[in-house]
Length: 621
Image (cartoon, rainbow, N blue to C red; front, side, top):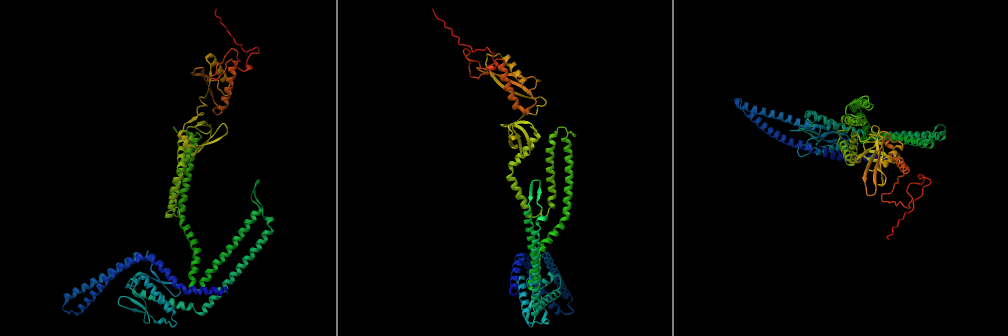
C-alpha cells in the first residue's frame, strides 16, 4: 500500500511539475535578465527600424532598376551604387547586432523552452513583434505540450517554412515557433541551421516523451522501484543485525579489553565512560549507514521516472557539489599554500636569527653602546611581534576568501571591537614598553610605588607585581606605575649602600655629643649595618622641649629593611638606657624630685633610690 501511494504521489507531481517549473524558471530569469535583455531589445528595435527602411528603399530601387532602358547607363550605375550602399549597411547592421549579442553572452540568460520530459531544450533571448522573449518561451513550451498530448502526432508533419523575415517551424496549420535573425546570431549560426537545430530538439523531445510514458515503461519502472526498495530493506536489515550482534559482543567482553585511561592518581576515562563512548560511536555509525543507504536509494528511485530525474540530480548535487567545490578549492589553493609556507619559514628563520642576536646581548657576549642587556628580551619580543604582524600582512592576500566582503566585514568588526574594548589594555602596554626602557627597576628590586612597598616579582606589558614584606602580592597596572613616583631601594645598594635612617627626640638636658655617640653605638650594634662607611647623626630640628636626632647608617640588604629597623630601634633603647639617657614623650616634663626615672630598673645600680622632695622654706624675719 505504501509503495502504491508513493507511485501515485510521483504521478501527481508529474502533472503539476510543468507549470510550477515554468513559473519558477520564469521568475528567476525575469529577475536576472530583465535589465540586460530590455536594453538589448531597445537597441534591436532601432536596428530593425533601419533594416525595414533599407528593405523598402531596396525594393523601390530594384523596381526602378527593372524599369530602366538598356541605354540609361548613368542612372543604372547610380541605382546600383545605392543598392550596394544598402547591402553594406545590412552587413554593418548584422555586425553591430552580433557585437551587442557577444557582449551579453556572459551576463544574460535567456528564458528556457521546456520539453515534454521537463528538460530545457533551448533558450529564447529576443522578442519578435509584440511578444517578449519570456512570452515566446512560454508559448513554445505550451505548443510542445500540445504536440506531446496529440495521440495522432506525425513527425513528418513538423516542417520548416520560410517567411519574409523569419523562418517558422509549423505543424499543420499551427506555427510552433518563429526564428529570427537575432535568434540565429545568439546560437552562432544561420537561420536555416538554427531552425533545423530547434526542430530536431522539439521532435526528439516529443518522441522521447511518448516512448518513455508507455504503460510497459511505467510498469517496468515500478518493478525497478520495488527491486530497489527490497535491496535497500535487506541492506538495512543486515546492518541492524550486525549492530545488535556487535552490541552483545561489546557488552559481554568489556572487562577483558577495556582499560581505564589513567595518569598517576587521576582517571581521565573510566571503563564505564569508555563503554558509553563506544556505544555512542556505534549508534552514530548505524545512523550514518542508514543515511547513506537512503541518500543513495532516493536518487536511484527518482532517476527511474523522467519527470523526477532532476530531483535525483539535485540530491546528488546537495552532497557532491560541496565536496567537489572543497576539492577544487583545495587544488586551487595549493599555489597559495606554497607561497604561505615560503613566507612562514623565511620569517621563522629570520626570527631565530634575531633571537640569537638579542640572546648574545642579554648574556653580555655582544655589547652595544647605549643598549643595556636587560633591554634585550623585551626588545626581542617587540621585534618578534612586529615580524609576525608583517608576516600576517604578507600571508593575508593568499588566504581563501580574503577578498570576500564577508571576510573583510568580519575583520573590520573584530578590529572595532578590539579598539573599543582594549583602550585601557593598550595604554598599559604602552606604559609597559616605556617602563622597560626607562629601567626604573628590575626583577628582585625593593621598590615603593605609592603606598606599596615590596620586591618586584614580575614585569609584564600590562602589569607589575610586587611582593610585600607580609607576603602579599600586589598587582599594579603599568599606567599607574608610569603616572606615579617610584622609589627604588635596591638600584644603588650593592655599590654605595642604602642609607636607612630613623629619628629620636631627646631633651636639652642631654649633651648632643653624648647623644651622637649613643646613636652611633646603637647603629654599629645592629646586624646588617655596614661599619664602613661609618654611621652618622644629623640634628634635624631644635624644638621647644627637645632636640630631633636622626641616625643614618649604610646597609647592603635593601630587602631586609624591616628587620634592620626593628633591630636598630631595640639597640637605641638599650644603649640609651645604658648611658642613663631617658627617652621621654615630647610633651612630658619630669619632676626630678620625688620621681622614679624612666630608665628600666635592670639598667640601674642596686643601691639606686628614688630622690625625695627637697622643700626649702625661707622665713622672713
